[in-house]
Length: 183
Image 1 (cartoon, rainbow, N blue to C red):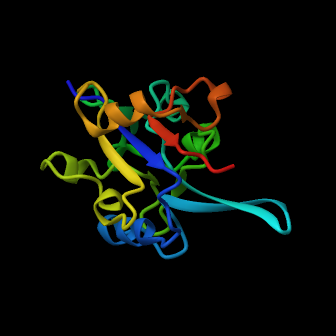
Image 2 (cartoon, rainbow, N blue to C red):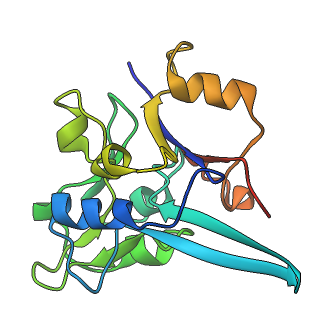
Image 3 (spheres, rainbow, N blue to C red):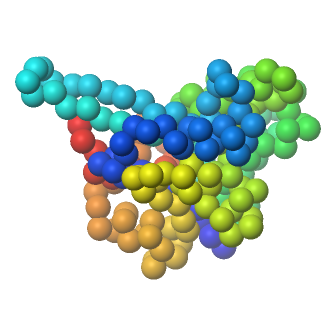
C-alpha cells in the first residue's frame, strides 16, 4: 500500500502563490480561507537579510490529534494510503479537530459548517494524478509521492537531502517534509 507524503523544496519556492490559487479552484475554498498557505519569514539585519518562503498545509500525520479528538468519527485516517480525510456528512462543526491540530490546518467552512482541510487532493490522487498545488507549482517546489517506493522522487529526495518537519515535538509524525531550508 502507498504511503503518500509531500516534500517541499524551500530553495525552489518563488512565492508566486500559484499553489494557493490552484487549491482554492480545485477544492472550492472560500476566498478568505486557506487549505494551504505560504508563510514569509525574514531574518538578519540589513544588508545581510534572508527570506524564507515556507508552504504550510495539513501534514497528514501518522498520529493525527485531529482524528483522535473527533467525537463523531468524521475525521479519519485512510487505511489504504494514510491520508487524513473527512466525512463531511458526519462532521458537526464542534471544532475539536481545529483545537487539536498543532499546524493550524483546519477551518470551519462558512457555507456548509464542516471542518475542512487539505486532503492532498485525494479525489485526484485516486485517478492517478497529483494534488492541484503540486501540478501547478512553477518552481517544482512541491513534490508528492509514495515514500514506500524507494524509486519515487520523494524517496530519493529524502534520502539525498537533510529534511525537517514542522513541530516535531508534537509527536504527530507529519508526512510533509521540508528540504533546503534557507533560514
